[in-house]
Structure formats: structure tokens, C-alpha cells
Image (tube, rainbow, N blue to C red; front, side, top):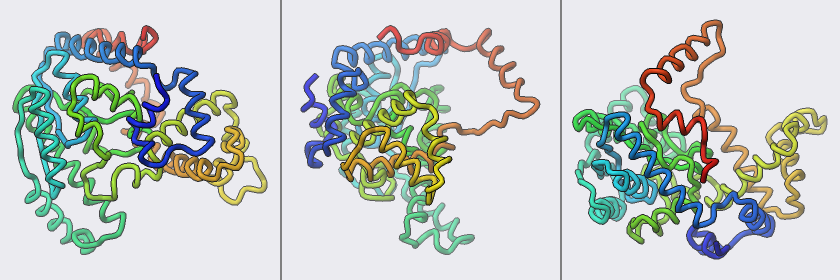
Length: 357
């Protein structure tokens, strides 16, 4: 797998390449198998398609609906469902959206052989914003980040309302299009992005998503497009995250590696008597553990990644369940579902993971 291809597909080359620490760490992570070789990615593709096919027959559902945003994640997800024999219905659901993005979504539907339905939700969005403006005057017109984020969340949730309604109409499910990088970054809206079945949630955005999209026939203009949430919050995904997707993925892998080597790193940061803030000390402790040396860019990105992980941890365990005196009831119903109803493909996934890849 050429190092240069990772830089190209991740769009990192266009962003100016990697700083010294990121460059060295990427090469080490390639050697360690964290960035999958192309033959393993082909096996991942076949494994996912096989699991989707098994789920279709075992669960007795064969229709998937999803929003075709014009981005690579939705197009790859749709292609994998189609490959597994599902009926796939792609919806373009613009809300004051760049027409180029909507056109890419429609073109991907055609290229992948999907059914396509279009519904402009802008009037419904504007009515909802106006309604909320009756209890919060800042909601409709404020241009500060919290207000833009709230309006972006409204867009995502209105789309999901539509998709779940249409899934019910067609007797199907809503396909999730979120990837592993977005999951870690919390770069999604609770009850607005994540659906019923998530075939690409374990794939990193920088390398695996575009490689697989290209491999399964997603149009080039889609897998080459600048990543954007389409919610009108900021200037593209990476601008909001504060790092390129490749930097993000490398940093997340590196943090996990450091904690694997020394699980007490966080405790050491807390115990530091010279700490001004826990966040700064944790970043400094990890920077030293990761041998970042004088790479100021890498240190800044590490702080950004840690801050975003800290802000969004709750989204990755939603809904939060307390370990209260009746928590054993969850295990009770889980055992019942496992024994009587859960498709075997899910039990195999829980038992074996990806060890056979």
C-alpha cells in the first residue's frame, strides 16, 4: 500500500502534507497494520456485504432507506447495501443546501442503481426555526456558533424524521452512514444521523472510506469531494473538527496505543501538582508519552483531539444507563433477545469481531 496514496485519498497532500511527528507516526501505524492494506480492505468489503446479506435473510427485512447527502459516506453505505441484495432507496433531502451537493447525491443514486426520491425540507425547517423563535428570540437570526449548531441539529433531525417515516412506509430500516472517525469526534447529531444498521461505522474516514468507495463504484466526484456536514454550521468537516481527518485518525490511534502501554497516564496527569488545568496537563502528559518533542503542530492537534473527545464522550454511550440496583434487568432482556430473536449474524459479530480478516 503506497504511503502516497493514503495522503492523496485523505486529501492530506492538498492540505500541505504532514508535520514530522504525524509523518513518522503514520508510517509506524501502517507497519503496525492500523491502516489496512488493500487486500485486507477487500476482505472487509466482502465481510460487510456478507453480513448485510445474512441480516437481510435472518431478520426478514430487505429494504434500506438513507439520505444521499452528496458525500462519500452515504454513497458507500448505499453501495454496500445494494451489493448485499437489498432494495435501496436514496433520498435527497436538501434544507437550504448547496445544489451541487444535492446533485451529487442524485447522481450517486443513478450511478449505483438506487431508487431515488427527492423532498426539499426547507419550508418545514424554516417553520420549525420560526416556532422555536417564539420561545428564544436568538434562535432564528443569531450567527453565533451555538445557534448555528442548534439550527444544524434541527436540519439533521428533520431529515431523520423523514427517513424513519419512509422506512415505515416501505417496511424497511434506516441505514446509518456514520464512520469511525466521526463517531470518535462526536461529529453527528443525536437522533439525527444514526439509524438502525451501521455497516461503515468501524471504518476510518481518511483512508478506508474513500478507498472502498472508489472500489465499489461510487462516482469519483463524490469520493473526491470536500467533506461537509451539509448543516450550515461551519466551513466543512475538518474546519469544525480542528484537524484534517488523517491527523485525527493518526492521533486517535496514537492515544489508544499510549493508554494501552500505560493505562495510568490519565491518573498521572490528575496527580500532577503543577497542573493549571486537567485538560492542559493531560495533553502535555500524552505529548511526552507519544514523543512529540518540538512538533508544535502535533501538540496543538493533540490538544484539539483530546478536547473534542472530552466534549463528546456522552454521545458515544447514549442513552446513558446508571448501574442502579435494577440494572440486572438489562442483562435479563438481553439474554432473552439473544436466545430467541437476535439474528445469528449479530451473535457471530459479537463473538468473533474481525479476527478472521
